[in-house]
Amino acid sequence: MSEFIAPAKPIIGEEERAAVDRVMRSGMVAQGPEVAAFETEFAEHFVPGRPAVAVNSGTAGLHLGLLATGVGPGDEIIVPSFTFAATGNSVALTGATPVFVDIEPATFTLDPEAVAAAITPKTKGILPVHLYGHPARMRELEKLAAEKSVALYEDAAQAHGASLDGRPVGSFGEFAMFSLYPTKNMTSGEGGMVTTATAEIARRVKLLRNQGMERQYENEVVGFNARMTDIHAAIGRVQLTKVDAWTRTRQRNAAFLDAHLRGVTVPPVAEGAVHVYHQYTIRVPEDRDGFVRALKEEHQVGAGVYYPIPNHRLQSLAPYAAGLDLPETERAAREVLSLPVHPSLSADDLERIVTAVNTVVGAGA
Ligand SMILES: *Cc1c(COP(=O)(O)O)cnc(C)c1O
Image (cartoon, rainbow, N blue to C red; front, side, top):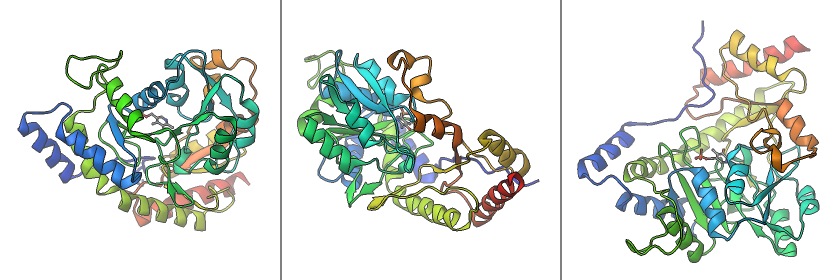
């Protein structure tokens, strides 16, 4: 029997282990020089010209970014329902209302026309998600935000290195969040990075991450402890030197799948967009769950479903969505299936994935 091909596989090497050891031996493990260096290097790497602030999770990054830009009770924030729950959760945690809007079917990201229709006098901002590593429709959303005088933010949790018209994700919004969770395109163990449009927003995120203090014991605002440790930052700094090569491998793997898969809709890439393939997501219109099972049981290929339940129907977030009908979101939740595309795949693994998909498609025809 062939070895199981995992749907995701974090790569943690000798250099990461050595970096952790270096910090441990220094005896200074909480937020310090490693975090400061990681922030500078991350910003230079992904969003040159913008400041970056490290926090202890992507979710904390979204939450603090929203608070730092003044989001709170009474505000409405437009979000997709077809995403990880952290997107809507972070809005709800500020006391604002997440307003769930449908996606456009090609890229699985916010539909700008649906966003326009959802804007009310209470709308404070729009929080698109660059889902699966493909940039959201930022041209249209940027224009709309300017016309309607609302803010634009970015959930770039899955999109390190993605871009649109040569502009990197993380450079469009008042703030953007990148996740550093192990299955994301790079990791620090757990962690998040917030890039901001202004030094003042960065300062506020820093205040909120550290009990509202810039100077020790002079607390300016009510804040959290959302600090990253130097241990995690040291891991992230090493990963930062490797992530571009991993992204190129993801893109090569995706191109191979595009060229060889038959009878399924491969993920389209919008004009001007660079896709970093956090996930390689196809649609299976009939019996998706049976397809996932067949890949796993008959071919030992691990496929993932991101996400089977739209956020507006989760018990936790449904109270914000009474009576909502989001047909493209529902259809995507029924049809999507993500194939392994991560940089640890061998040529043999890729061949096996293609054979598995094409065989299951053929069997179903
Ligand atoms: C992973 C993820 C988050 C949350 O990031 P954490 O680091 O896990 O807190 C938020 N939004 C999206 C779209 C994600 O994929």
